[in-house]
Image (cartoon, rainbow, N blue to C red; front, side):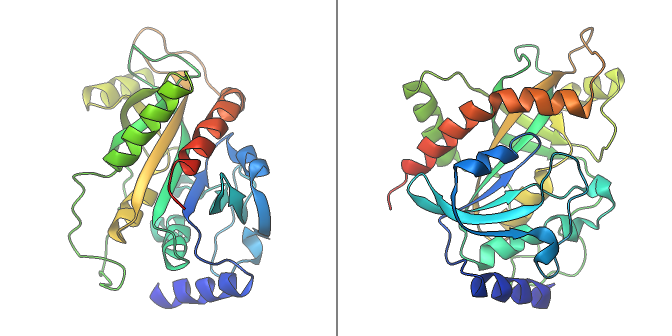
Length: 272
């Protein structure tokens, strides 16, 4: 893994990617935020050594380096999922690469199903904690101390200062945000009514199929993480309705402009 990461890092540095201020993972329906980035470098995943290739419709599969909110960012337009058949270490490989390109602050986004009765479709949730229910752990196996410690402390998976900063920005912009816990399941099926109920009983507010492995690996390498989730469907008992990936993308698309404004102001708020 170490050698593969270093090989990919060298390839990307040779393409002109240098010390991004932020890494950004753009999830379902949120990929078009990349159009706001003043791109210096755009590289399709299939052209990057050791990178998987996204197989999900709506995940474009492109690494973008450029200016956004007055800072240099490295954005993944489309992520990789365990349900696609990849080994979990392949899923999180780009996060390891980001770290060794100089990324210290990671912003993740996703679409999720809300189980909190206070939530409604279209809400944006600040992720303040998570529950990992994906069956393969990204740190399972021999640990390479060059990446991080064998036993990783996770008492603050999402940086509290960054969460507080975004809450202040949203208030100033008069944008309402929810806050809660995200639970990750394997997928690719959407949840049954009983599974939604299980998610709620386990203490989560939303459920999805991504993000958590990325955050675990980012924390393993000492990165600060911040996450936003768009509530694209509801799994509230008695209110569970048919859902499709197309509908999820549609709702995420509506929230996209608001998230773009929030993230841009969030990035601007950091000192150069």
